[in-house]
Structure formats: structure tokens, C-alpha cells
Image 1: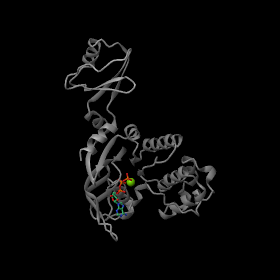
Image 2: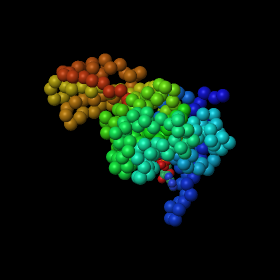
Image 3: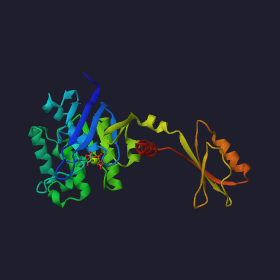
Image 4: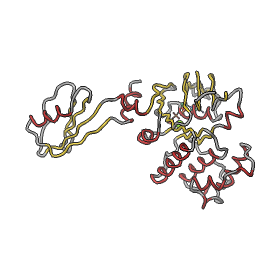
Length: 309
Ligand SMILES: Nc1ncnc2c1ncn2[C@@H]1O[C@H](COP(=O)(O)OP(=O)(O)OP(=O)(O)O)[C@@H](O)[C@H]1O
Ligand SMILES: [Mg+2]
């Protein structure tokens, strides 16, 4: 038995060319394991291959090479068990406009062979906040409501793993908070969560572990904490009491003067004590009205890794 929810080895996908479009190698040999019980973030720029990977997990895209194990079941050898272990909320809405939310959930449960007595339609409608829309046609739902219904559809067969492909794209703040609250609750109940998002502060807040994909390859996979520790860069922002110029600085401190007159100093906290910067500023005769610090965030890590490629 394994402790991993997902085990991927040598996964490749080449989309066949059509007409004038050439073939596209979207995944170039991905190795990735995702531990059970975690909230795992799959990040990367547009076109990196995230949805391709997720759609292979969901059985919506056929891989070109490699092995995929879901909850210990090989996708090729045990297709039924591996499919039952995972629920996927796709990036692209795939709702039938003539079904109502209650109807969609019921049909989806039927597809997964969930017996009528075990269906949780009302509970799921409540979870996704669509109880009052249970009998409205899908085409009359707003964009955010449709996305919530997609989440509901991913949950009908009570999978051990829930995959969310950009669940919060185009969703308002209140709904986003509700969605993340639900995701956390499901995770606390034991569900493994895999998600993609372009909102890196969401990933930073939600994910235990993160893999960054670029051009069809995993360029890094680590705990969120380790990733944030990789960039030991800090910025001290000083508002001078009177208009002031940047003082002369040693090479390891980068200075900048903003249009509003604030002075910022970017440095590595391992090498430079903040006090040294404050002294440099005071020695230059600058009176400090206000001071604040900025730490590197996931966005800085992401940009430094994906830009280098
Ligand atoms: N059905 C398809 N046929 C041909 N090429 C495709 C197909 N789907 C995706 N691609 C190509 O494969 C690459 C990876 O696409 P994918 O949708 O997996 O990226 P992504 O990381 O999900 O991007 P985004 O952040 O924009 O959602 C892109 O170059 C894309 O153009
Ligand atoms: Mg995508």
C-alpha cells in the first residue's frame, strides 16, 4: 500500500497536429507524487500543461506515454477503481444547458453508479450554495453559479481525491472565500485536494506542497514553506520625513526611489542586518518618518523560476 494519492511516472502527452497547426508536446515526461491528505498546488504559466495533466487524471485526455496511479490503482490496469477515487472540476464548463442543478448532480451520480439511496444531491446543493436554484435550468445560472455546480458534480461519488482546475477564475471575492472554506472543510474530513490557480496568494495560503510546471516539465516541487524560504530577499521601505535622495549603498543592497519619495532597499537578510540599512539612512541625514518591510512571496519565487527558463 502506498501513502500517495497520485503517482505519476514518465507522463508524456503530444497533441496531434490538425490542419496547419503542428503537433504539440504538452507534457515532456512528468514524474510527480502527491501525498494523501494534502492540499497540493499545481502552478505554472498559461500553456504550461496543467490542464493537460489534470485532464489525463480525469480520464478526459488520453496520455501518450507513462503511468498514472490514482489512490494506488493503475489507470490502465484498474480503470474503474482509479476513476472512482477522483473527482475533477474542469477548467472549461461542460454543463448541459437543459439540466437543472439537481438534475445534473443526479445524472452525474448515475454515471458513477451511485445507488439512489446513497445520493447526496440535497447535501451537495447546500454545500455549493445552490439549493434555491435546484430546479433552474443550467443556462439561466450565472458564471459563478455554473462553476459551483461543476464543483458539486465532482463530489457526487464521494471521491478520495478532489481536483480543481482554476476553481476561482472569474469568481467574486465572497464566493472565493466560500469555495476555499469548503475546500478546507473537505480536506479536514480527509479528502486530498489538488488545485491550480493563477492567484498565487491563494496557493500560498492554501497549499501544503506545490509543483511548478513550465513548458511541460516540473521545474520544482517542494513544500510551500521551503519554496518561500528559497528567496531570502527582503525589502525595507522608508518614508523620509523630508524629501531625500538615496544614500550611497554597498553592492549587496539595491536601492530605489519611488515617485512618491519613498526609499526602498532590497537585501538578503542572511548577509545584511536591517540595522545597517537604517544606519546608512540616518548617517545620510535622512529623518525616518515611517518604515515597513516586505518579504518575498510566492509570486517572487514563481517569477524567478519561470523567467529563468
Ligand atoms: N486539445 C488540444 N489540442 C492541441 N493542443 C492543445 C490541446 N489542449 C492543449 N493544447 C496545448 O497544450 C499546451 C498545454 O495546454 P494546457 O491547457 O495543458 O495548459 P495550462 O497549463 O492548463 O494553461 P492555462 O493556465 O492557460 O490553463 C498548450 O500549448 C496548448 O496550446
Ligand atoms: Mg489550464
